[in-house]
Length: 129
Image 1 (tube, one colour):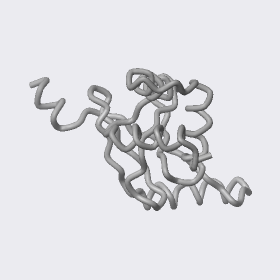
Image 2 (image 1 turned 60 degrees about the vertical axis):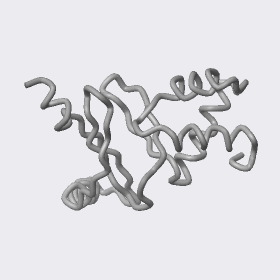
Image 3 (image 1 turned 90 degrees about the vertical axis):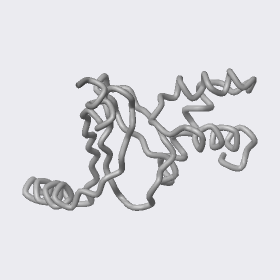
């Protein structure tokens, strides 16, 4: 799927976005550029890119999935600004140990997890003052 023209165009848009965006936003950006790619195609490509680790996905506070080109290859989490959408990738060894401990205590193996952290970035905090 990634070897297609549509996949290349979606990849180009993702490379130009610095913040997390919804599939609908990405689709809208494609339409503004004159690309005739359906929303279902955008979702399919984003899912493939997410599965292979090329794209990060988080859920915002309303439960909507947002996407962004992944900046690091290892497992990580994000701290995202509620105001401007700026997102920083962070390592979380304490979170990793906690998730493993909780799952093991419940008798689970082969675990995976997601965690989204939201707050106000320093720039937005300064603007509020």
